[in-house]
Image 1 (cartoon, rainbow, N blue to C red):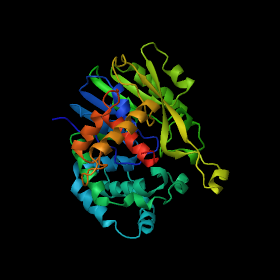
Image 2 (image 1 turned 45 degrees about the horizontal axis):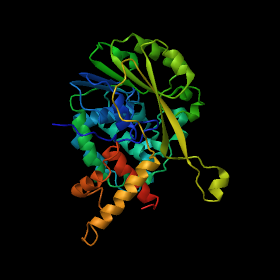
Image 3 (image 1 turned 135 degrees about the horizontal axis):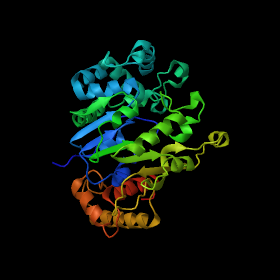
Length: 367
């Protein structure tokens, strides 16, 4: 039975939720042991098929509690989430006031810690759940809508729970996750970016600090492992220097960040938005890159695809004109979706790219 890719259930800074379906094309073709040593939102784990053995790891104790509780006690987790109904700001303030839960480690109070982390993640600014008391100002309530449709979220969480069944979940330094790795192991590492290590403490995205020495330790450890390794990094010369051995390959990707816009004070006062910020990702891997893969076009669509989609949309509208309820349901109706895709199949784009372009153009009122 083919496994369905899942979206990460978390709002996670620096997470790969929106681009994991593209990054997976760079994964090795065969492996029986998968390890994600800086799990965070675990977007790649949820996107890839389950390996015979899987291991996800993260140093954040709240995140560890969430994944372990979802794996072992989903029903209790769902029951506690349903209780968090009422004034959301008050609930948020009550949860951040429970410092003992934030200070707990290991398997103490797993259920309470899991619910605390999940609620904060859904409602805090940017999904940044920082337990460090020196940076408690980073925990502020800004997304009350994040707790909307809780039943729908729990349906998704049940699928997440099923995917986590039998997975090894730990809260360790990354070096422990490399032990026993073989040539049949695939390690995906998404460490904090180099530029994160140079930030002022109050500007750091993550709860735990990752210093330049940590980057050096990581490079040395990954250089020595027999496993297949893929690393996601920011684009900078320092990364290339740390992974200078000829066995390492590099692939630089570009995309536009979703939901992130550069807005100046002048633009705010004029109620204007600037263009979305363009970002880059440097993939580093120690195995031959896949020989056949589609070009990575992340979050952008070229003019050729836009023309094809616009033409296909017009043809479909004409074809189904006058049929009640069938005028413009190309995404929700499986039969219509298949017909629409067939109108654009002369090009190489995937179904997700075609439909994504359709939605993008509709939102921009170009259709």
